[in-house]
Length: 147
Ligand SMILES: [Cu+2]
Image (cartoon, rainbow, N blue to C red; front, side, top):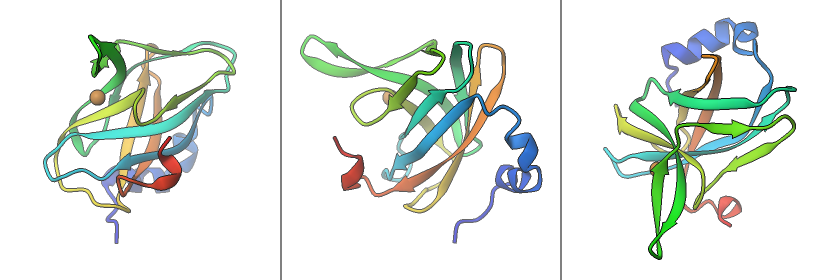
């Protein structure tokens, strides 16, 4: 059983508040299982349903000490992760966070997470608006998610 975090209970009790800003649609958020104590990655699709650019500048999770928005860049023939100060999503645009590309870097885990667990995450934009989502931990090689 997945135990409910206080944040999850909050979402259950106040669903309208959680849906207060529907402008950013989050599709299929998930995270590959990782060895205990290791960083994890968050993947999802983000669609901007508003008529203004959404600029994500930060993220947070009660289960991790630190969350960053990362991209992958080719550096001298080697793919490396790089922190993004801002992820801009234009009106109507869908941005995919997926293995080998953009991802959330979930750092300093507070506890061991296994397949089936849920990770509450907030995406934060430059207006300090917060977009709540819950990413499901899945086995690393989930075939349908591997490109
Ligand atoms: Cu990363």
